[in-house]
Length: 190
Image (cartoon, rainbow, N blue to C red; front, side, top):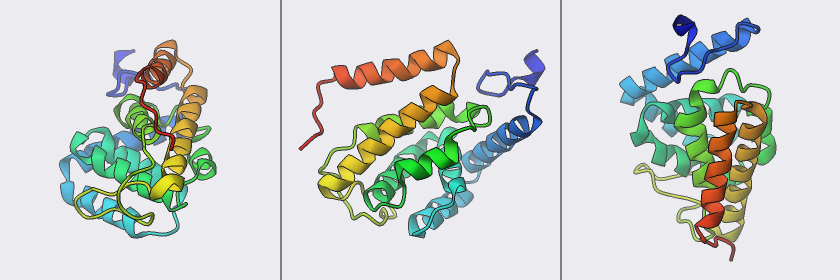
């Protein structure tokens, strides 16, 4: 069974060829973004500049951050800015990710959990405007409403992850992250 495992160590189910194909495409995109910074930068600029976002934007941003840890701060900043500006909502995130857990397996530990944690930790005093982030990757939520929108998006992402990933170790990681967040004593509410 070792031959049919993804790089994340999780074997894709052979019950749904479409999900297995999507999983392989996601892994290929992640690897491509890690090896081609020009493509990753073009994606980040494009998503940052857009005002309307198809479901693929969430997938592509997660791919961009998966194997290239140096892109994670910019991806988090874009999600924060777009959530603060109302472009990324809980509803749009659910529409793009729900029902696709098998396809998103390789992104679970590498970018989706990190993104959920970063959004949930967003404070109401983030910098930047609600529309996008600067070239350097800064930016954040736009005021108290932006921080609340980011935290709502982070909570929704954790919910989606818990619903989609049913393996005990994956769920344990989600619960552990939430316990760490609650136990940190950081109060982000105004």
